Amino acid sequence: MSFSSLPDEITELILACTPKWAYPNLSLVCKKFHSLLSSPQLYTTRSNLGTTETCLYFWLNSPNHSSSQWFTLLMKPDEISTSDGDILNGYSLIPLPSFSHSSLVPYESTVAVGSDIYVMGGLNEPSSSARILDCRSHTWRDAPNMNIARANAGAIYLNEKIYVTLGRVLGSDELAVCQDVFDIKTQTWKDSTILDSDGEVLKDIDVNCNAFEGKFYVGEDNKNTYEIYIDWCMIENVRYCCTRSRYLMWYNSERKEWRVIKGLRELREHPTRGLKINPLSIISMGIVNCDGKLVVMWKQLLEQDNGERKTKIWFAKIVLEKRHRDEIWGKTEWVNCVLTVPDSYECSSCLAVLI
Image (cartoon, rainbow, N blue to C red):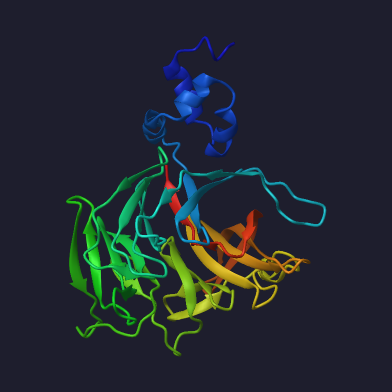
């Protein structure tokens, strides 16, 4: 009764100061809450009050590749420790509206721009299609098609532009050297060529790409690197990566070498949820910067008694601490299996969106 007597503007201010992990339950309290929590105006208020939060998004693709199911993961900040030492916090995993692919091709390249997520290209077959997920309203809209249909490409956002690089192009099994560049302001695509430091066309490189200090980087797949990494991100001008051997590492720019993050042996070797239970049953999927903390997402393949294979999707949030010049330590703040699905489903790395 006390809330029902308040003007909508006051109730909106209170909800805007409430952590987003509580929104799913709050929306069930009454029609007034549901209406205010569904309004785009609420996120404008959150931005004005400085109460925006980083939310995580990922998708699953159905076995017939006809649709993608997107989810947002909201972590409860209060820590809960179990008797065996596991850190299992509450969370809200919210399924979002899915969309059907006109060409029955699952999207592969994803990048966050503000409160939007752009999804572009194909996973197994080349596609030029592009769509946008509005993370405030959880609605989809079409974006202009890319100039080149491609699959298994990488994408980054840098200086108001999206770079979709490499990947297989339509009619060819080779990696594409030419990249598509999308201008956010003009909403147009143009072609560009990736050159190395000597001005030569860059070839034979992995699709891993990212941005660092205003520059565009791709991961070179060669034997000179310490580990071939699957994904990487930036936190306070330090590069962090997840390697194919399931090590979490950071890049020492002074010594120009990758180093293992110390203090995470338990996370890597835990008997039931570790990053490395079995080299053949664990696949690392990606890492992301979540408000200055490292969030790792991976999937664990399990064999059931009836022979059916299941996939568990795990998330862990890690607090980082610099010790001395050559050491970075990590402490697992949050870890959970958030979803179990049939092994036939494909899934993507996570994205961090500020809303």
